[in-house]
Image (cartoon, rainbow over the protein chains, first blue to last red):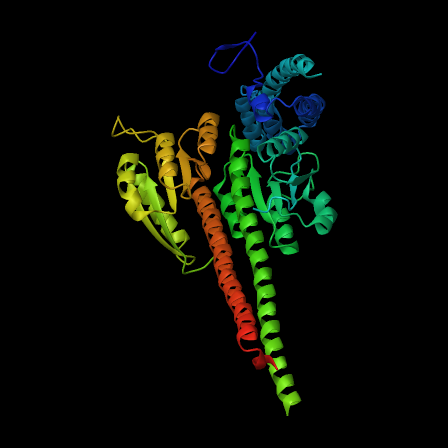
Length: 125
Length: 174
Length: 175
């Protein structure tokens, strides 16, 4: 189990209410979006990792930025402050150690989110 | 109201998950309208299709360079769109709330400015509702304009006909 | 936008500083575009008292209205009252917290727009007003065309009628 920034324990990182409400329960639409999420998130994580390896701050900033949009669709709200912090740290282009740390947190939560999405997707086949 | 006229919508955003969700949301909210939605990752990729389709509406993200570092930003794409067809309505999306982007987009005749937050899809729905209303009223005005021309032509014919008969009959009786 | 278009706007917000700033901002932003007349109210109840007599085209309505008057109705209730009194009035809902619930509720109650009081709030309200004024103008134009067409149609019918009447009464006229 993981905790949010206020130390509160969190059972699920995703919140599917918004997605299902928005799509009016249309199964094929929800499944399509989940499929895209499952492909895109590992790609984005890899891109951030590569960029951090090359100490390419501009790239880290761009991917952190675009990931905010991706995770918002699955309601992974605990990632919003993490990604925002990564974005502003990358913009300042100073503390790479702190960015590694944030990246670990990001990777962990994303893997949990992927697991949850995979499980949730079974409802829609 | 004229709902049968197809409205072409372009979504330009380099985040596929977001674009797919947005498309699904629009199709669900405005299911009574006949919409055709096209997705593009960057502005550069929509250009040839734009010239063919001339969309009524474009939903355009400001940040488009995550996968393509050299991609133009949203303001540049907006400028291109307005030059290509000034009638196309553009909704500008941004992840960060920025007065600068809001003002610049307004100066370049964007129709709306939406910040990507929790309520992003709700805000876009409001925006679309208003833009669809403008488009519909314009279509109706255009229809009445044509109708007026037709009526004026009818009246002209009728008057001309009567005048012609008068002249002809007058000359015949002489 | 037509310079002669007259737009009457009601502002309903219990924060006086905000209302004054917003009023000034709108007046400056639209001064070359149309004539705006803005009236401010602290509560929905006060706004409704003036509503029937003034009939504003646009109401900018804050969701939280009970900071000074604990019993004041919230924005959604006022929105309902406005839409019942005049379905064609456009209402922009303002809120200090970004909430899916308020956004959805307002949409279902036929609000025209939803604006979060963030850094760009004034800009966003300008976009909103601009679109709403455009709707009003485009619909007005469509209506004007329609009315003229009706007059033309009546005129045409009258002429045909007259021509037929003359033909029947005085056939020699056309010979």
